[in-house]
Image 1 (cartoon, rainbow, N blue to C red):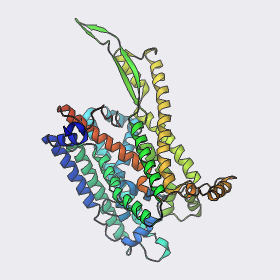
Image 2 (tube, rainbow, N blue to C red):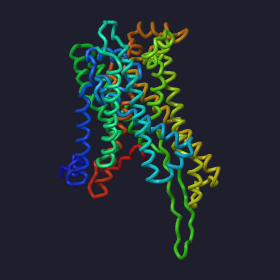
Image 3 (spheres, rainbow, N blue to C red):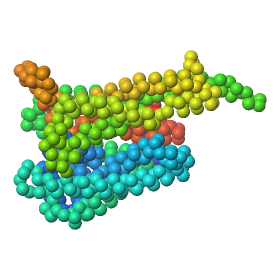
Image 4 (cartoon, rainbow, N blue to C red):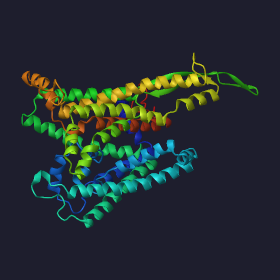
Length: 472
């Protein structure tokens, strides 16, 4: 039968056979459509042409980085210009506070009531961050004169424009936050992740159109396009392979008799994911790298301009700081979300042990050692995924490297390999952060739909095996 030959089409057909799943899917798509419509409602008081020229010059700053997650809303300065990033930042800050602040740690252990209280604090902090970021954005736009043409982005600057921008952008982010929570509660998948996914994925048709124009105008050859496609397929396959990767630590539970019944005796495993931090270390590292450029938007300083130039995309200092930042934040984040001592105590409490490892501190040391090695592998994986697309976009600028920079540049130019230092000029849609988010969110959403179908005795999308999402 056709369903047997094509399990993917069969899985999609099965979705619409289940009323509840069909309702959730349509609800999710409807709210995402509302989000996309709102992204074209502009903020008052802006000259769109001047704003476009301004963002063309800001690709290496945090404004260009945040524009990825807003789906181009920041470039257009729509009512959703700040996107969902303030909410994500607030969530990360509250998560960090649960480790260092006893009151927040107590709340996190109070079950559903504590979770609701933390969510409430997260919303309040999101509003404060939105007010600050919208004011900073308004001030930066008022002081900007793209290309020195004398045509400012804000024709009528002042506190009227600033207050209106703060009110508009803050309200837009709060509305997006509400949409995300509604999708999570009444739709399918994680609403916040799906909003970021929609903002990035909407750029795919434009990216394909740009490739077609470059080929039609003979700026790119067919070989260049083929190389680009091969790199894209390889990168996506690599992301899927590693995101599904786990190290399973075997755990054996001893037999025990309670009354007349015997419990335990079975074997299980503790799954440790290769990339436990997801895309968060990349976001943190990229934000740190772009801080000097962002501060330079508000402060006129020759020193900051020089530092910002050295931290531009493709520069050696940028690559070095970016790599070290990713590795550092991978270890920092996993130390927050995973406690080997607590896991070892729980295993011992329920009568379990790792074969060949003594329960207690020895088990905690073993888990910590395995986790440290996995985290290093995950960090190197993130570095590779993020730097390959960076190479396609801007190349690696070797000229500033002391002693050997000029020689390397001359060597690449002499032998026709100047694309190594100039890149292929690919759109930023192909950035490593974008690919991580798109592939990871797609895997999570498909995994949730797959679970719903299997729970109701329907065939899923795959006949062989199941999809393991990023949560393991």
